[in-house]
Length: 391
Image (cartoon, rainbow, N blue to C red; front, side):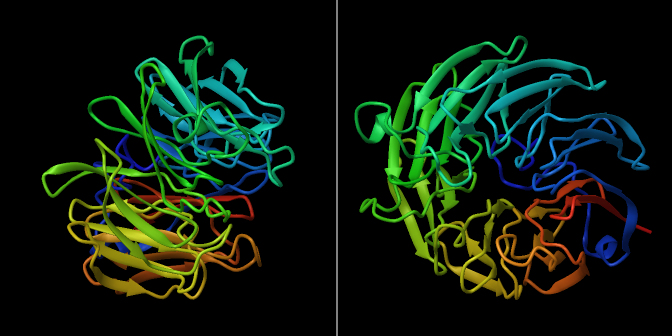
């Protein structure tokens, strides 16, 4: 599942990779897909499923990389596939939600509302619902209404629709495009980041789409500094909380019941495509916040008060959402909006930020890594899907 579980903490329970194993990482297998692999590979039942910007969804054996099946011409895909209830679900940049059987059979293909809508993130499966955030296609022409849409997992029928701007103001208006995935708590409340002009976090009831609260990170609404990262749900200081950053470079901890700000940190310089664009990770004590703004790298913050524990200067922007193993932090680097031929993967100690291992792909990385056991899987802008395993 995208970011490990519905809390979206990037700390999958099945990850056993530790510092000793990291130092023995070697390429286990590598395949080339059509178009950039920007999403996180999904892993379940010995299968790895990945999607590409060339409109391909393919399944490979986790142990060997042998291809099991492949579907082509689905439309460009930027987000991560989701595996749940015996199905693979993906969203496309042309606004389609597509369900595929684990044998590669196309089950259904539904389109979300809008003139030219796009799904940038990973669809979320909760019970019998598939949730997706909707925004504009690249260039915002036309500027779409940001909505959260729910579909029936079995049939692809639309169940409900929530316009992001209905909480901030009446009516479903253009803007507040969504390119994050929702986090969902034990009370079936969803939390999702939205874009400009309101730039904040929207909370809603998953079963019905009823809005609960909205917190804007930038109430002046005059800047294009979206909350594009996927929020994390956690327990902090005796309360349920939501943690996420924005493209403006600010990272906030919010009260999950009300949306009120618990603490806030201005970490880096922001802009429309930089700042804290990638989703953070959380290990039960600390946040690990990737930065594509100045300074680039990773910030380790204490969950209790946001205090900086350590920083890592990556030299290149980090658009890759980190994954946490046993005391290790894995992520990709590279200026995906600049030189696509420079980038790689880094593994740090989560204790002090020291470098344990790194490799050069000669390709920028947007993909967040997946950790399954002691295997690391990651994509890059060139279209490679690579598995690393200790030997």
